[in-house]
Amino acid sequence: MALDRLSEEIPSGKWSMARLGQRLRAIHGWFLGACPAFVLVKISNTTKLVVLGVGETRTIFAFMVQKAEMSVLARRLKEARQRAGISQERLGIEAGLDPMSASARMNRYELGKRVPAPELVTRLAAVLNVPATFFYAADDTEANLLLKFHRLRKDQRAAVLSVIDELLH
Image (cartoon, rainbow, N blue to C red; front, side):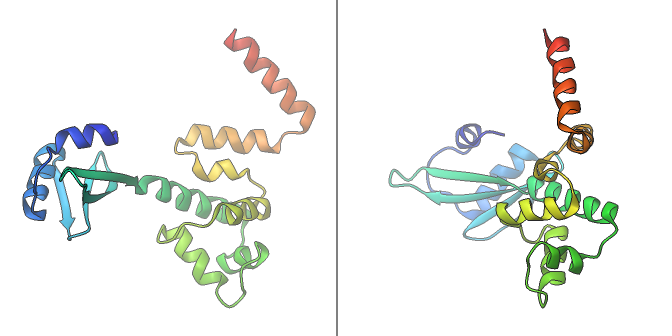
């Protein structure tokens, strides 16, 4: 759902959190909860965080953050670590995390409670011998293709790209 569509669905004006929750429930079906700063809404089996505020013209503006991206990263991280056969602690240490907190931090990343910085994702990918883009591939087929392409030699990659170019023309 685009930000502009959400803005259209929530008319400007003063909205109490209860009334806003009712409106969002009517629009999207399942209202999860609310507090003065944000509303969580379940849309199409992914949770989206809608951060609400009131602009100078008293119109409600919203920013949406999809937690689905985070859960994809968490799932792919766990999958790659288990495939490599190493512990969370060992992965964290080999990626340069403090040995005292490596296990706990990796656990939080795999549970989706925290999101690693892009630099750490790159280091984790190197340790696990997967492309960093693998962690962000929502589609399983795309993720599998990324893994296989990553394992090819440079000349084999060029050949694969050549075949793809021929198929697309």
